[in-house]
View: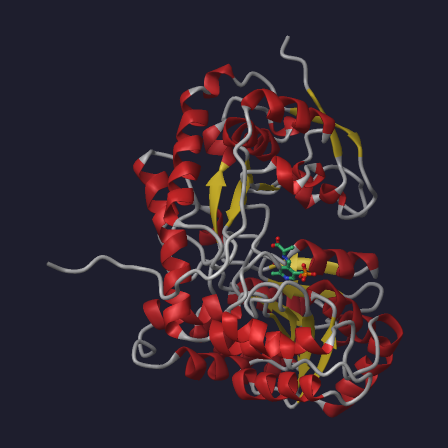
Length: 461
Ligand code: F0G
């Protein structure tokens, strides 16, 4: 008999979580103004808000924490991190930052100017935020296949080379800050970019004389998909694949809270010394001295160890098979989700689930609130609220896809939790006709509104 798959770890420490009642949740979500970010974590049973900074560190990472060197300048931990980044990604230069968006802030302070254009594959919201804050424009060049959730395509994160070429041809060279390639592409469903696409983007960038930056938050998960899906890579190790990926980039921003499996941290990787020197000025201003940049020594040590672990096949197989397990359970229940299943999350196609709710009433947010009410599961809206207003017209932007993202923290939940999630979603779908209306915004911030937005229920009459 073939043995079933089992996790490549055992558990040494546990944290209690509590199931609440529907009555309790009704009160809490109303108090939270129907914004799941406003809930206390104790009001949540299974927390799938994000996979960012929510992972469980390994015994080796905790051991590395104890060896952290807290010297202000030139700490051993800094050199450990430097060595790990050089070994795994091949970057000669790097700057530590306190998280991914800080890396964007520092790097974009050097490279993004007012009126610039930044093509890429569905830029993440903080990336787009840092671009638009500088009065520049993010242009989405993701392949059209990504927008058909039921279509099976192995690399839905790919950049459409025709779309990219059009932008590069129509924009004066000095107005292109860089091309941003997001690995995996979070906004389109945790979908990977193929090695071939990376190679082709790099060739086109060279032809037009522009820089390529990898938004690297989930680079290791991307490498796993290359190994499993792209011809010629099946016998390569994840570490070999990662090294090749970074041959096609000039620089990278990293949120270490994802694929470096730490609770806080980030960095910028660079190949050019001059860029490193320019970015260092902003790093010192915004983050801290260049050998710690917002991170403590112990955190830099854990990060170095985490980078090594996340680029091991066994870890990635356990991780991605859990996402797949949840995806399959959802599919078996007939719940429409982005296919193929992504690397860090299952993305539920909310428009298909609640086709009777008008888009002006925030369909994905409505579904996310219902899932919370059903079982205390906290997902996140990746839809109109996140897409924010157009910076020029100030009108709501309606993205092609409205998702509820269920992001799975690394090494945290078991497949029993996955079963609860799938069954809760099934229950929501069974009573969907009783969900008569969505929400309206009563308060919002001028930028990155989804974190603090306040909502009220629309009337059903
Ligand atoms: N890039 C991508 C692709 C991301 O997913 C994130 C964060 C960032 C950059 C910014 O990194 O949070 O460390 O400042 N994503 C989290 C999420 C918040 O829930 O997907 P950060």
